[in-house]
Image 1 (tube, rainbow, N blue to C red):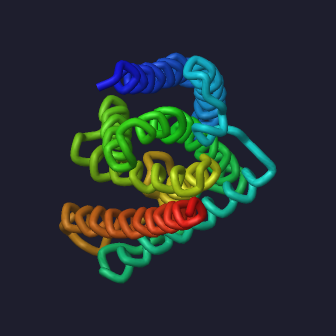
Image 2 (cartoon, rainbow, N blue to C red):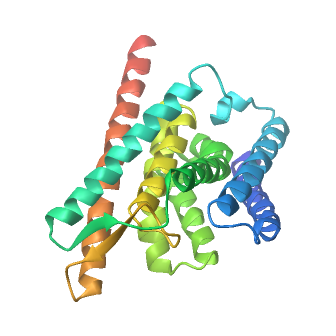
Length: 268
């Protein structure tokens, strides 16, 4: 096995750790800000840090920003918008399954207005930008080029879940939540050869869950369970989440496979 086959993954791991260090250094600075503004501040600074690190590591590997999907262009906003709309559809599908199962309903919460929703939206966009740059940009592309699509996907998903575990999540929640979600965001990044769509998907999912009151901070709505067994309700929610994410991942994989087939046909 060539030296580069192991050197590049080492750099990918160093990149992820560097992005995590930037995030850790940023969090205390924004600790005194109110919810919403705190996420916006952390996400903005950490995104800028992840982008700067991407530029450094890409130059280190004598690559281009476009090679890792991190080069903005005139279509970036359209891709971001498409991803956001698709993400909202996924959240809606997930919520519809939970509602159809009869295990919960949503009612209007108090104390949250349009201004708070705007700040929350901006914050989740910034945080999604940071996480996609840190995981589905340089690291995923370098691993994919060396070890193939699914090995790269699984490794990045495990590291992504580990970061959430270090953030306080249980291993089961980290693997079934962010870990499964990472497969979708990664497949979207590979299929579209950029980060606009996965950033939109990621931001829409988090914002949608905030809107439905499924985050730690109060949302525009709040969930009222119809079941005395909270564990059963949680299980329904997790199953619906996995089904929605797997189907969406499959859709992007089929698009990627079709692109590969067309590319192969054009070479003959």
